[in-house]
Image (tube, rainbow, N blue to C red; front, side, top):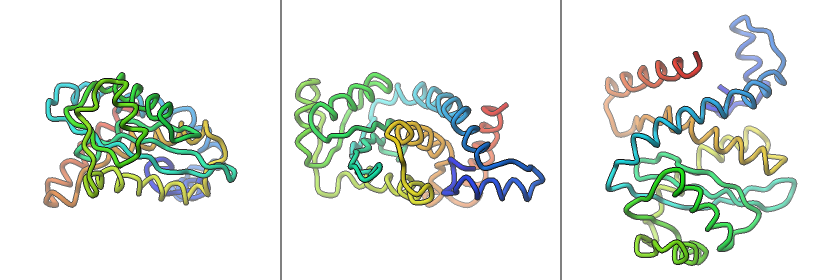
Length: 212
């Protein structure tokens, strides 16, 4: 509940108390720190194995600023054409070196897409020139809306958590939140109610299997 919904640790404590589970909010924090990355890794492995064979895979890359103790950091994110968050990477800079590290990590983990859409940041072009895939880059004024919209769930979580205090905790939570969000991202605005209920039941059943 803490990772999936924009809730605070104390919100989760109160919700569990209504169900007869008496715990401290610090217990919730220890739980997500311990088990969140394990669940996220299982979800990511399943999705990577399914998507690697998709030939028309299109990525959208974008970065969003995040303040940590008053200092600016950047959260780089790779999203595919269906809104699945593929990779989250935190850096202190927004230069070629940071873009190159982010793209190498994404390509190594997920394989190579047919097309990569970015904004006009020159760091992307410099990094893609070095990687030898500059011919796959697409830049357009509205072409990267998929990545821009994917920041919204993270921003809601950031407000609920009253910002982050460490770069390490930001990296960890961003990665876990992205994979859990992917699992329950059913695109309900594109399908009818019955199909949505079927997919939701399947996602919940798979989630229970992961936690078993």
